[in-house]
Every structure is written in C-alpha cells, then in structure tokens.
Image (cartoon, rainbow, N blue to C red; front, side):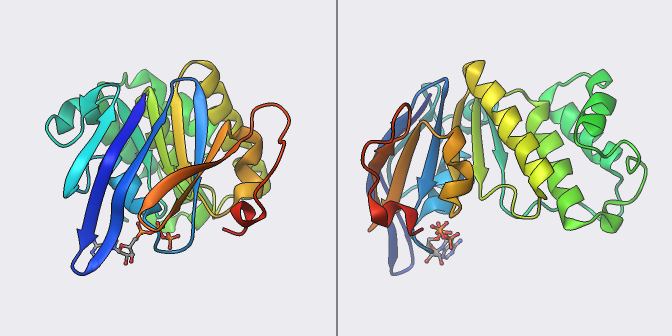
Length: 226
Ligand SMILES: Nc1ncnc2c1ncn2[C@@H]1O[C@H](COP(=O)(O)OP(=O)(O)OP(=O)(O)O)[C@@H](O)[C@H]1O
C-alpha cells in the first residue's frame, strides 16, 4: 500500500509539491503522468526515502518513510530513470552486491541474469553494456527483492519492444500477486494496458484523471498530452 498525504516539497524558491495526496492499493498499477518538472520524480524520491519532504507523510505498507526509512525501504523496490552501475563491476558482481543487501539467495542470481538476457554478458564489465542491457540489469536488481511496493521512474526508455513487453509482463504478474505498482511516465499510451488508474501531477498536487479498469469511459484529452 502506498499512501501520500498532504505532501509539500520545495527546492529553493520552487514549490514543487504543494499538498499532494493519493494512495495506491495492493494488487493495482497506478501510472503518474504530468508535464516536465511537475514533481513526478520528486514524489517517487520521497516515497523511496531519497528526498525528505518539508511537510506531509508518505507511507509504504503503513510505515512512514521519513521517520522509519529503513523499514519502509525494505518493503519497496525503486527503478530509477537512469540506471547506472560502476563500470568496472560485472553484472553478476552488481547482482551479488544487491542480493547481499536484500538477503536474496545467491541461487537466484543466475536465473535472474538469464531472465533479463544477460547470461552471456554476466562476466563483462558494466562499462561495456549498451543502454538497454544496463536497463535490463536494473530490472534484475529491481526484481531481486520481490518487494510488495514497486516504484518505477520512466522505465523502459532504452528497451526495445521485446524487453519493454517483458517488463510489462513482469509487472502485471507482480500486480496479480498483490504488489502495488506506481510508475511515472510520459508514455501513457505504452503503459496504459498495465494501468488500473492514471493520476496527473500538476501545480503541486496529484489528481485522478482516469480509472482504466474495464471500459475507458471518458478520457480527458489533456491526460494523454503528457
Ligand atoms: N535536488 C534538486 N535540487 C533542486 N531542484 C530540484 C531537485 N530535484 C528536482 N528539482 C526541481 O523540482 C522540479 C520537479 O522535478 P521532478 O524531477 O520531480 O519533475 P518531473 O515531473 O519528474 O519532471 P520530468 O517529466 O521532466 O522528468 C523541477 O523544477 C526540478 O528542477
């Protein structure tokens, strides 16, 4: 469960979040759209415990991210927009490092590398990976924890259609298992098949623009212009 209540965050003079509130239930996928600079990434960063809000609360499965950050982070996985790893490490070393942090068994590493098509590149240096391969390694790290709350920031930009479809299928399976997915994106048309709800971030707040489960009755034209 993701709960954001009356969230405020400014960077200098820029009041980015001004009372944003929403929630996302287990077993649902929520897509967050909105213009450049409207606060989508900031909202995800607050939820992931990477940015401290000025006021308001963000909770992951009932745990306050600001006051109990480590416990909240144990319940979530975050896939950033630009996934970067140390150039000198191999994909396998990267995965082993994160497996140690997440208490994930070593036995899963090879299966995960295989799943994301990096079995043959497991011993290369990350510096030699293409952008899409790096994203796929990011997905493997993201999947390690099998966290109940999944946060994604504009995922799949460097993925070809096959791997974007792979990510879509994985996220759908996790939603069916009961995970709460929250994804910020400009590509609403790409991710709409996954989305149960679409929220729009604008003017410092977040509002629902589209429940997408079942027939899409009336789509706000502006909602697609993201
Ligand atoms: N660490 C920071 N320091 C200063 N300003 C920041 C910082 N992080 C974000 N901002 C500013 O906050 C505003 C919101 O940024 P944010 O990245 O959350 O927007 P966004 O909706 O994700 O944008 P985009 O669609 O371009 O990715 C922007 O004006 C940005 O410059």
